[in-house]
Structure formats: C-alpha cells, structure tokens
Length: 252
Ligand code: G
Ligand code: G
Ligand code: G
Ligand code: MN
Ligand code: NA
Image (tube, rainbow, N blue to C red; front, side):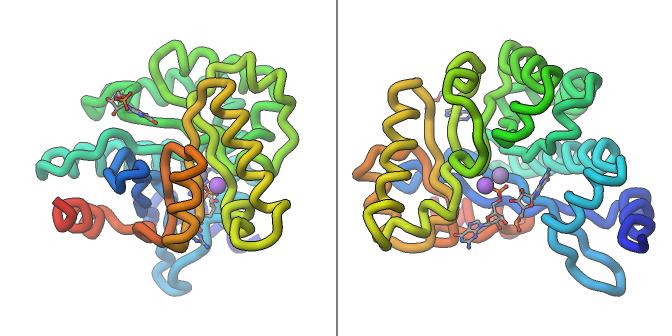
C-alpha cells in the first residue's frame, strides 16, 4: 500500500513537523501547548494526522515516527525558551503502540535529557483505550508518573475506561473530548456529560482541559463550571513554532 512506502520515506527524509495549540487557564494565561503532528508531502501536500498515525500504528512504523515527533517537540520547546518565550510544558500525544513498547520509558527519558529538559517539561497524552488493553502500558504510566511526567487522558469520555482503574492510576488531568464541548449549547444531555466529567475530576483531584472550545459562550460556561484549562480555536488554532512565538509575545 503506497501510503506506507511514502510514510517510510517521509520518516527518513524528516517531512514531519509539529504545530502547537495553546492551553490557557480561565484567566486566559498560557499554561502549556499541545503538539500536533503534521506531514508535508512534497507533491501531495498536507496529509492528515489521523490518517498517517493510524497507518504508522498498523505498519509498525509508530516507534520511529513517535521518536522523531518527540525529538521535534523537545527541539521546539528549547528553541522557544531560547528566544525568551515562556512555555511551561509541551503536551505530546502518545499512541497505544508507543506506550505498550517496553523500551518507551527509557527512550523518552533519553530524548528529554539529551535536549536539556526534564520530565516536568513534557506532558503525555494517552487515550483511555491504550490503558485498558495492555498491562505494560499501565506499568509504563506508573513509571512515567514516578519520574515526574504529567499524564493526561485524551478524548476522555469517548472510551470505556473503568473508573476504578482510572482511580488507581497516577493520572494528572482529563481532556474533555471536543464532541462534548460542542454539545454545550445543545440539549441538557451534552451539558450533563461535561458536568459529570468535571465533578469526577474534582473528586479525584485531577485537572481538566476542555478541547475544541470555539466560542466565548463555551469558554465562559466552562470557567463557571470549574474547568481548569481551555484549548480551542476560540483562543488559538494549532500554529507552527514561529507563529506560536509571535502569538505568545503579542499577548504580553
Ligand atoms: O491535529 P488534528 O490536528 O487534526 O489531529 C488529529 C488527531 O491526530 C488527534 O486527535 C490525535 O489523535 C492525532 N495526533 C496528532 N498528532 C499526533 C501525534 O504526534 N502523535 C499521535 N499519536 N497522535 C497524534
Ligand atoms: O499551577 P501550579 O502553581 O500548581 O504550578 C506549579 C508548577 O507545575 C509549575 O511549574 C507549572 O508549570 C506546573 N504545572 C501546573 N499545571 C500543570 C499541568 O497541568 N501540566 C504540567 N505538565 N505542568 C503543570
Ligand atoms: O489529540 P486530539 O484528539 O486531542 O487532537 C485535537 C484535535 O482537535 C486536533 O485535530 C486539533 O486540530 C483539533 N482542534 C483543536 N481545537 C479545535 C477547535 O476549536 N475546533 C475543532 N473543530 N477542532 C479543534
Ligand atoms: Mn491530544
Ligand atoms: Na482529544
């Protein structure tokens, strides 16, 4: 399948880069950024991450691609800080295959250290599903948290994680899926789901990030409801490194 050949070549030729989307607190202060992978194919243009991440997962290329993306995130964070731009942490999406790989923890630590960063600089976004299907993944999360990495559960509410398991894991925050945030203006059901997640997070002492916040109304509602952080087009779209630096400096 030709996407796989192209993917292999793209990893070797480093055709990937990262865009960054700010996570702001309820006062609009920047707290961190999420790194989102981009592939610029020389002739076919931009290829969507959901397509190439899925292809990489299925073909066994997620290890090398994930490593390349981690390197990019660390390089960019150091470059931003070098230019005097304060970014407290970068949050990186970790695929199920990456997390289940027994060498992941040591590979990650190696990358972070080589870039002069610490575990506090890098947050890890893992999905509910990746914690449910492999014991090695749960073990990795425990070791990562013990090393000081913050763990966020991505797309929370769309999977089927057992709440008792979640309670036993050293998780730091829940990311409320944008499908639920998008329903805030709709019926009562959409609102109830977000309220339930916020109440659960509060009980478990977890931070929350609402994803896909597109309007002032959503942002105000979430602030009122006690959500910790906001991420979405209302504040900023994902941006390449240079634009992120400009965006941060323009707001000062
Ligand atoms: O960036 P959007 O920008 O279109 O991203 C679509 C989806 O692709 C995200 O929801 C996420 O699940 C996945 N994704 C984006 N970047 C990465 C990455 O660096 N690693 C992994 N594993 N998934 C990513
Ligand atoms: O918000 P607080 O004053 O507790 O922050 C204390 C330290 O923890 C700061 O260095 C800040 O950058 C970091 N921090 C706060 N919230 C988060 C978070 O949600 N994720 C990560 N990775 N670090 C955070
Ligand atoms: O990894 P994750 O599933 O969290 O990726 C978030 C996805 O949501 C990315 O594809 C990102 O580009 C997208 N996104 C971020 N903010 C918004 C928003 O406000 N609206 C919409 N529709 N998508 C968003
Ligand atoms: Mn994410
Ligand atoms: Na998400």
